[in-house]
Every structure is written in structure tokens, then in C-alpha cells.
Image 1 (cartoon, rainbow, N blue to C red):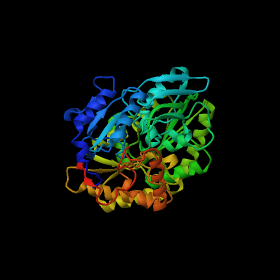
Image 2: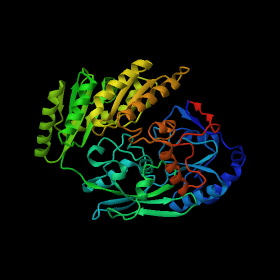
Image 3: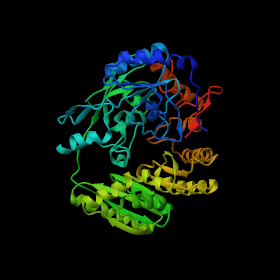
Image 4: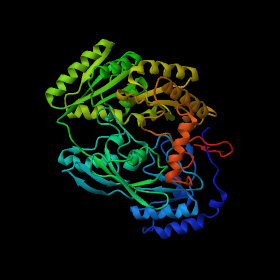
Length: 483
């Protein structure tokens, strides 16, 4: 079972002193939480199979308060785990027993919208969807759209370099962020980038995006906003085999057509989502693609014509084009709700996040099925097929003794398969604790040592989000409580 280090008893014994000091640094009376019942919501994140109670939670409202908290914890050698909305699916926000959770949920102001430069500057606790909500009346949007965008914060998106369905055309978080304000562990406040498109010298902003809260705490972000397209319409294409759907994706990409999104769902996912949302999905197919294009009516018709022509080479059994906003909204509601809908068919699931070359998609889907058969555990596939970012959901019952351990082993085999075909361990969920012990299958010792040296530059005492990303050394682990 995945493991975390034991809490330092010396730090735990100083809890009252630490809580008192934190309260003196924060202006709001309710911004420091230390009672067990109130800490309970913070003991886990989206990787809900594991939980561990934090030492305390602090909820600052400004960059300066975050800076003060970090400086105090650095001076006192207290671990800190930054947390957005806690939607991490890799255990990235999972606390330690001797760590302070530093949450940014109170930092939810949109500081500036600059249409001339097509940017928005927001605090770290603003939710992903609220950036688009703020600019959509004026015909703009923020491109990254993870399925959790109603809840996830921009700070969490920065930490994991989140993507979403439309990242095929518009890129992931790192392609849509222009500037960062960051509080470092020693309390210093630094800024990277800005409203300009490119900065000279080292790409420190690129270093922080995807660093999983291990180098500093992002407090303000300047993002790129884009003009909303004239229109957009998806087409649903159903197939009798996962491999046919995978081959169709590879052919579309190889043709040079870049849809705004290509999403894959298999039979279990289709039925769960349709039962939950009545999206109009075909129920007599083994796999389905949602392929969306955008532009003027003429552009959309031209692209959909080419895509449906390609699809017909792969034995589709159904094909349905959306012709209005209501139909399109229903199709996307089904996809965005699919992860939650799977809860109707399984009490628990582990969501994987491997990325592969799109040309290997048919082979990998066949391999995932073979691994599923080997372990006797069902998989529901829901993923961003256009850029090869897989999200197999391994279904299981956490109340059965030993089943969680089997799921971990099965997940590791799926990720090993992704690496073996030239892919990588994660596309947008991050490493966290989930893939931490698998890092050596992708990186050698020199690779990992170089990453560790970079972390040490910004966090010499290794106090920020410890026990994540890098494999733990022997003798420094204790089993976490399974949910």
C-alpha cells in the first residue's frame, strides 16, 4: 500500500504553540483550524483511498499572509502542504501528520481583466470556470478545462499542469499562463513572467508550473484569455471495438486535422454517463468518440465532413452530429460528469493518468483489457484521446480486504505499459503519491538527482509538500490508513 513518512513527534508535541503562532500571522479569526472534527475535510483529496489528519490548516487571504506563514514554518522546520480545492487525483494535496495545510480557498478575487492585452490576473483560489465566467460576457474564455473545472482552483491547475478536453487545440495550463507571483519557503516573494508573451533568460515560470507545490506557493496568476469561437459542434461516433475507436483517433491526427477535442468513452463509461445525464449517447456500442470542431458554420461543416469521412474507414456503428447548442451542452455534460457517474456502477475507482503516442492507442487499449482480465477488475475508459492522455478508471470495492493493493499493482502495470510504448507516467494529474514509487521506471538516478537538486535550490530543508513525487528512502515510511 502507498506510504507516507511517520509524523515527527517533536513537531506534533508543539501543536498548540504552532497554532498560536499561525493565528498571530493571519487577520481573519476563522483562518486557522486545529480541532479534529474541523480538520476532517482536509485529511484526504481526490485520491480518496488514503487519508491522514494534518497538524493544522491555515487559510490566508493575501500574498503577504502566505509569505509570513511560510517564513514561520521555515524557521521552525514545520512541513507545509499547499492546497487548492483538494481535487487532486494523485494524492498531491494529501497531508502529513506533522504538516500544516496551507489552503488558498479564501484567495478568490479576480484582480484585473485586460482585454487590450488579452490577459486576466487572478488570486490563486479562483476556480478554473470562474475565469471564463468573468470574461465570457465580453466574448472571451480561458482555454484549459479540466473535468473538475467547476471546483478546482487555478493554483491546483498550476501545480499539476492541468489540461482538459480542449487541450488538444489550445494546450494545457503551461501554454496559457503568462505570469506568476510566488511565495518561497523562506518568505520571499518573487514574480516570473508578466503580460508579455516571452521572457528572456531561464524559464523559471515553466519550472514552477507542474512542480506540485514543492518549490513555492503560487499566490497570483496572469493567464491568457482568448476570443470565443464563432461556433462549435461535436459529433458522436460509436464503434463495436475499443481498438477501432483508437485507430480512428490516430487517423484523424495523422490527417493533419486538429479538432478542438477528441474524447474517448467505452461501454461502462457511456452507460454510466447516459444514465446520469440523459446526454443522448448510443448504448449499443463498445466505444464512443466525441469529436468537436469550431469556427464559422462553413468551417465546421467542412471539418465535420472530413472527420466523418475518415471515421467511416473504421467500421462505425453510429454517427450523430450535434446541430444546436442544447444538444452540444448535453453531450459535454455527459462527458464532464462521467467520472462522478461511474460511482453508480462501482463503490470505488482509481483513476490513472498515463500519456502515450496517439499512434499506439489501439495497441494500448488492447493491453489495458489484457491487464484488466489478468486481475479480474473492470476498467472504465474515459480520456482525452486526441493527445493520448489516458484516464482508465480501475473499478473496485475498497471494503474487500486486499483489493486496494491489487488495484495499485494493476495501475502500476497500466502505467508501465504507457512508458513502454514511448509515453509517460502522467499527463495532467501529476505524480503526487500515486506514481511516486514508479518514477524509476521512467527516470534514471541521474535524472531524479537533478530534479532533487532543483527542489533544494528553492526549498533547502525539503519542507514543501514532502513525500510526494520522489520515491521514499527505506526506513522513512509508515503505512497510511486506508479509507
